[in-house]
Image (cartoon, rainbow, N blue to C red; front, side, top):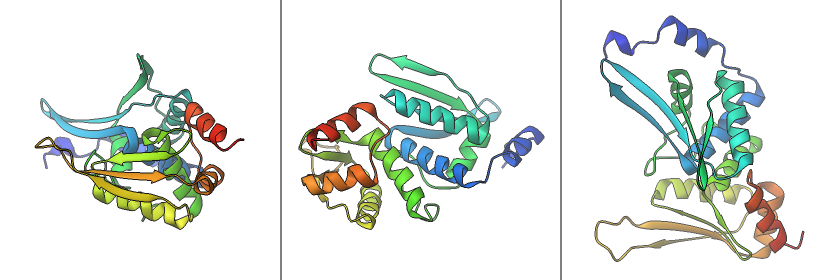
Length: 218
């Protein structure tokens, strides 16, 4: 590692100011769920230095507000949310934020994981699940559905749902086209299970919340 890879005094000062209270723990759990569901973290070479980027692509204003609130509270950053037809794009270049989050877990379409070592109690588990399902789930009047190519990630989500006794089904689908990855699908179908999901987890998403509540007659 070159000298340029070592944190500057400014970065060290930023890291020293990251809150460590329980609110911070919950916000980091939420951020990790959001990014696993619909975001990415990249560290790449740019000329003679490294660029640390954090991106999120929410499609609902609640998620936008929650995400921006977390970045401001944790890292004192205020990126702009740019609207792109059917979704928002929030991009932040920050070594402080990126290095803090990658200490918690892995990210990327095929690599994201449920950070069990970080989610030390039920409140943190709920925050991660709520954020992940808000970003990733498809919801209609009969089901809540997750679809991913990440087998280990899906296993972790299933384990968390089992923790809250939310019944669900998992199965796989192999596309006929060559070079297409196996798809792992999870569904929460029973009304009782969706009721439990609504009570214990819920969404940071206006439309998904409303569809779920309407389907339950709430």
